[in-house]
Image (cartoon, rainbow, N blue to C red; front, top):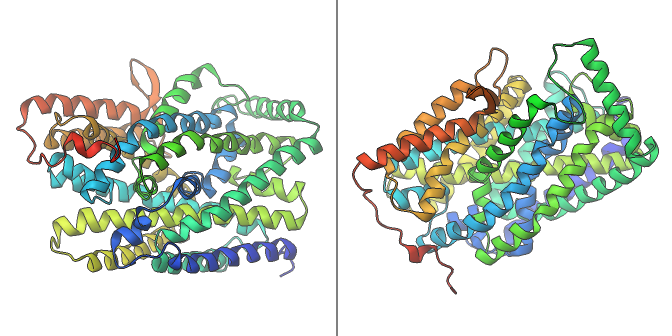
Length: 509
């Protein structure tokens, strides 16, 4: 026990125990029949503006965000800030599109994005492909939440190697699995209140106290730039890095931000957060207020530069933030901060597993295996699948290199943007054909995967159009849309005309 920071660990355990209790208590909050899938998996669609704000914030701004975004800034500089404009671009998109999606799903009883796709086009193979893509892309995303949690547990002084090193993480995730099974979406919604408040506290403290100790932001920028210049001098063939974007990084930066924004709300967990809202008004309020998180994200990204100024030297950039806090703050506040980051893994991991479980049950098992499932059977299967998804993510972390999960998550964004045409076009037009969109989706998935393949890892950017380096997902989705458009001229009309314009209007409109 000599290597363990006892004070920080005690504070960490206190807050982790607090949210565990909240996770179990949440089953009684806004009580409903948890044997109904819409109650277990969407909280009965009764989360108002405030709850949705915390849930979506907890869903989108994750533990891995707090670890990974500053890690990229620490490693290569300004390019890591692409996450800030992409989160800003998301909110006008939510304001314009998600209320229409909520209206249609509420009126027709849909619980997932793939449910909506089937209602719009009447093609169960397109529904199944949308569902399968979402589930596969979500798995490594959950695994990366575990990476964020594991980094702070290791920084507390617990072993890094062997099964003993994974034991605290395994225990934490098993606790998460049990209370998610019991309480459904209510658990992460309740815990999100605690998580977001804690993250705001430690970020505000960090951006005031750390610069004061390091001589101000000017000194931080100067120190970071000197480190980047020294790295490039030592290895001239290394990728460009610095506190400003290099010319070669501009188009990748722009297109990665745009493509990431298009992909994020196609994930099952993002749509779960939206569809659990009490109505379009709550969604619009959140589209207006959620940019506050983007401000926090920009401040979090700055921690990467602060680590340079503080003289933090780590082999793995993902260790930069934990080591920075250990160097800058007393043990009790380190424990508080690490607890916030760990809890920041629990909320999105829970919502991701629920979203994937809902999608598997509604859009793979029911249409292809058992079309006559009762509501109780749907709920039971979804609960079991949420456990399977979590265990799968845990196995990835326990037995495969972290880089494997990171590469798959990067590839997941390239895949998820391919769902964009099927869902967004379906909100505004019935012209596109289900079979055409299925063909476009397959072409986009194949092209995006091909463009992303590299000898060492999956890379998000390649020179795929007129020699200009673009985000692979954006290049692939353009091919996706072209194929879907051409084939829609040829193929027969959709089998389903279930959705009408009236389904997309607000009830009080």
